[in-house]
Image (tube, rainbow, N blue to C red; front, side, top):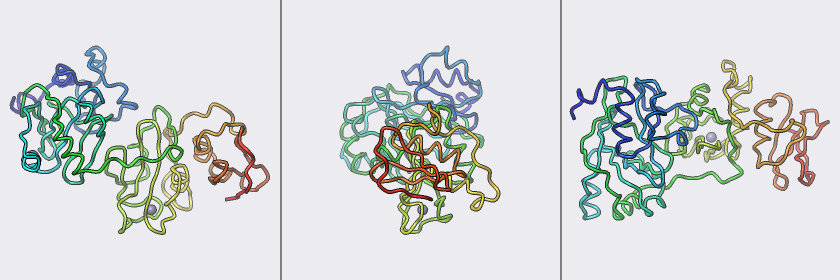
Length: 341
Ligand SMILES: [Zn+2]
């Protein structure tokens, strides 16, 4: 198909290019690469009745999930030739789509045990390997600048060869994961893009990481470190900064947002109004210890009225600022040390 044949299609027609190949789809904002549907990995479907409910000018996202497809998303010219040369192998014919942005290929494969174990991988300026709850924009989608995603090889989707997984593994980094307990469960309608844009943060999505150009705590770029950003895996939210001497190093995401909301820090911006934290199920003065989740929520909502500090033994302790009323997590031992922020 040439671009004019793939252009001017409806969302349903674009989606059918994927669903007919067994690929689940979610809508992407018209003219964009961005899916803003909350919880989109769970909504990905091949059911046309469900897909027909979305706006007909939406672009499509071809969703990569274990048991389904994975996509080698090239970010450099000549990537396939380089892989073939390095590996001394020839890539099997498979379904390929040219990106409407930089024009590099999206190479579709079916998952194998090897690729499932590999998971999402990233190589800066070279490729992303989209494997688990990731997507690529689908064929027929159109960007605002007129760029069209075009099918360049209409072959059946081939299983990813083991040698290609080997090459991907040795030429990329696995996604860094934040350890459990440092991320916080979010509200089902949480929209991380909207939140980061609200705070004026410029970011680059790298897998589950939203790497910020400028450290939101330091207010400038850390020259010695590129590892500053937010983490969002669809269910939990976290923050990491490895900038030397940065006050943000060791901060939880709730503390970062509290700082961003501080009227002394930000004279212009209001606190982000959209939902962030998972709903509290109990009143603020009686809450269970949930790896910091409820504490973060309290900080987000009531940061002006009390402080929060993580403690080593007990998870956290809270004060109302005056020190008169210590909030303690139920079913935990009382803190051995008490902090006031
Ligand atoms: Zn920092």
